[in-house]
Length: 283
Image: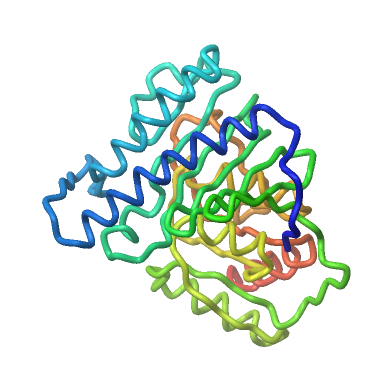
């Protein structure tokens, strides 16, 4: 949960909030244009995923702003080339519009994901929800903040005094139709009271910070820019994101930028519950 707070005395955090707020406004205007049926450009990338003019405009704005803010740090973005990335021990990792399909289906659950990684680990994370004018932001070694741009109000994360395990809230993507998801839920239901909800993109990580989702399973691929910021924010509150083998993801260390499946969890107790269900699925 988050409680009202004064603004953090941190120049990087405040600067990134301003960048993401302006980028969110760009996306909000593009979303309005699209929903009103006006002319809107959508392309298909080599992997058959869509990219829109909103993705590209947000990417250009954030790239330019980050170059001014941290000129020594390179940017690894979904919408840029990645040829030199293995020479970078430290960089920004960006998805300027996570949830392009949600955008195109007129579901306002898309986000901007931005993180700073060093030697494979996410040290600084931010997720913006343009439609709600909210930004979740923080460092790995301290509890995160939330900024409400509409109210111009900061909030600080506060761990709940009582950790109630059940009912367990399981978050699923709108396209979680594969049989693995149903099997996972059915195994959990044998030992626990389970409630499910659907949401798009990294929006689910923000719901986890708000106490609305406890476990988020993913059995189909994502990319590194989809998970880094969410993992960093979850780890900062005692949760995390691990592979289906139970290992935390690392970033910009592998040959490919594609992730395999994962389990995200809001607190350690849920990690064990989820991994036990996975072990039963493999039998």
